Length: 451
Image 1 (cartoon, rainbow, N blue to C red):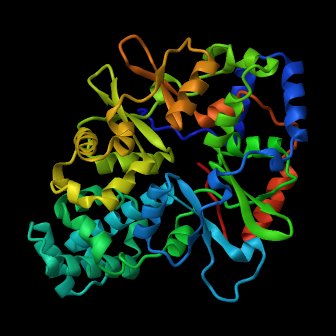
Image 2 (tube, rainbow, N blue to C red):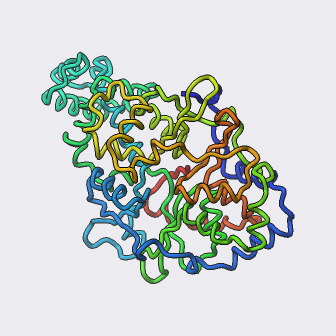
Image 3 (cartoon, rainbow, N blue to C red):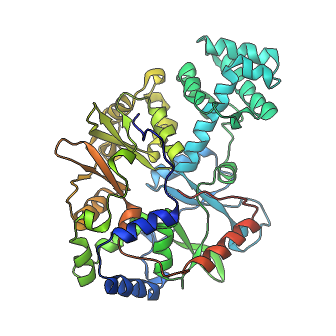
């Protein structure tokens, strides 16, 4: 797995946006005119979701059923309803947050880490787990993974984590992969069939693994606010509610915005900006040394862990010292491991390339094309318009910038595309974000991460 040698942190919202703005070779008058125009467009003018109905998932739905809903509806995220009877009728009481594949990845990998704790007899003993549980763990570690051993593993993992809080220690996280390797196919039996994992609800995930804030906007909010939230402030979706009716009327995503921009062909401002080469717009934002990749012979769980650790939604799959692009894996692909575990009987040695080939040979084209077909690419001198067309036609969140030898030299994301069309007037979102964070704190959310 290829990552930057010093593993630098991703830039903050301000650093990212300021860098993009400083590199854009656009007339200031055009930027100011566009910003003013977007500030006058209300959210109510944005097209509604297909069928005019936002898919919502009750908080007491099991994780597996939630994954099934996301997969069947071909969506990446959905609002979560508060299942408690008598809950407040405002939006803060009606909705718990948003469930997405990012949160599900965190849940899967943390439970792999719980298993890792249990697999370590020393750690389990230090945490106060009984010798009977440690014995079951020992059997599992030696390769005897029958039902009794799996049940013992589950109990030991939870006991160790609760008694010792070991999952928070540095170094435990990396052992999640070791746990899955020891357990092989039985790792997913633990998640899908054994308690307490089987009964884990969407509510518990939303409350425990919050990657981005749930901050609704109203129909009269400006599109400039939405564009800034989806670009500078790193949100991937923005729910829309009516002021007097706390029901989500629309769900605006980065993908939806880029598709909307594509429909602006023929307008002078769009044609001018879209004709510019990526370099004139400060793209790709990351240098070749900062692009995170996974090798085709890496374990698939390592690829998902890479996305989780770096808070990114997808990674290019490369081969050889030149990092030749051979495919890509997105955070959404975790659904295949959870919904179709029967396809991966040899999970111990399942590599990224084998994962892609297995799905390509067993799933319908509509499900597997994104894995077995080459991911969308462009050259460093491509125009922004061609990038928008490619992303919109493939319904992907990123396009990889490659050289003549297909070496990955950069990546352009939906966030980058949106950032090309706007800039933030001084302090424009300050009051809005302060109000939003106050509402979140009122719901008991102590901290919020953005991706």
